[in-house]
Length: 612
Image (cartoon, rainbow, N blue to C red; front, top):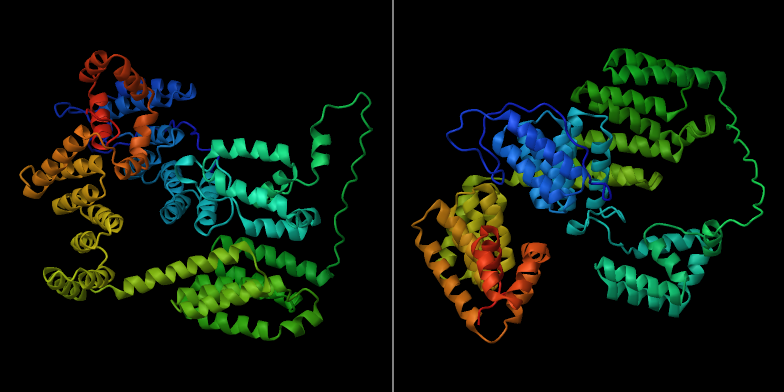
């Protein structure tokens, strides 16, 4: 998933849904009564051609035009989402993927677009939910299955699985646990780790290269020239065992004139089937029961498992499968399941004596996992966690570990929902307001914390807490609360004014202007937004005329992905060069291009461009 985000073009028929164009879509004029599907199809064809030529900005332009002609077609948003993903603009890819799902909620591919963007934005919980929703529509879709696996692995820190944010997951990841595991398997890696000079070189490489992929590659080449063993250690951290480097060199060296004769590969003989006739019959009944279970023919499936148990009563698999049927038949069978499985665990050694392997560690682990699932359905989370831990003691595998983590997540969600009480939330909010008036901002924040826990869907609680955090100089935390507030209520004007103030205090003047402008779009006469914007503009003018460079402001600006994207834009680079060589020509070009004007304004507000 992390290496293949190039789209396969969607050719589905357009969905019919009455809605204006996407915010970035260049909506159709109000006077046009019906979508122009013919023009939209032409634009889509041009977009497809541009994408095939890997001209993604041009493809985005054509798909935007297609959306303007027909904003009801989910395929246009899907294809444009793929273009944004190809440019690693995952926030925009997510917007289009979400709109595609909204327009066509029964189309599985829309969920792959949305889930992919969420994965690369490291929103792993959202990606997991999106892929699960898609799999409900298409349970066998390979892309959705792979996406769910990648998102789950990334969420739980499986080495090499993370999305990598804006870098597309292309950089190296360094996992000392993986290196230790490799040393346990490969004596040569263990020997390398005992070389202090070599480990010091690798450690220095890890510290200096950071997340810069180009620097990683350059430093790795230098390190390999100094000591080829370093490559084996670094690859072992990725979970890759290169084996003997000399063998690798021989494998990739030019073939000699006299190639050695190829050895004939011996066909592996299948392992002997040591099952008794009764056990073979039992397995056949079990297979029939499995097929009936998939068809939800539960009574018939139970009959087959009973026949299997009659033929071979000393195998946990048959009892475990039978209990799976009972679970599907409803809560009234849960006690029966737990009693049956606990009895078999108590008799595990007796069963193994009668039928070696009938109660193996793996089979006992699956029984514990089945019991855990029953407790989870009953919301008895402590007992479920205990069962999963017992299962891991028998057989420590990735599936059970992920199931345990998902259970812990569900318990946390359940407890949060059980704690919700809007009336108590209002009581804590009023107490917080009193503390705020008394300028006791720390106590105000504590009351707002409790109010948010009691009613996490109330937008004003996040806004109030953000005000307290701003007074406590915790500006990044205040911005997080304000983003959540606006997510719940995008029309909350006061949140925009408080967001502008937080950005102002962080010297992110371009973001402050953007926040105030958004608030003024909702309420053009809002005094706080108007005064805040005037304050920011005055500060930008003062900073622009000053001969001193504000290092803090520049650092904040250069860490902003939007500013980075503007500076990487070839058109902006050309404009900056022209501005140095021919200022008059640069001003002329800027006056003729609204997009360029907007970019220059943001760079000036961020302190990157100065007029002094």
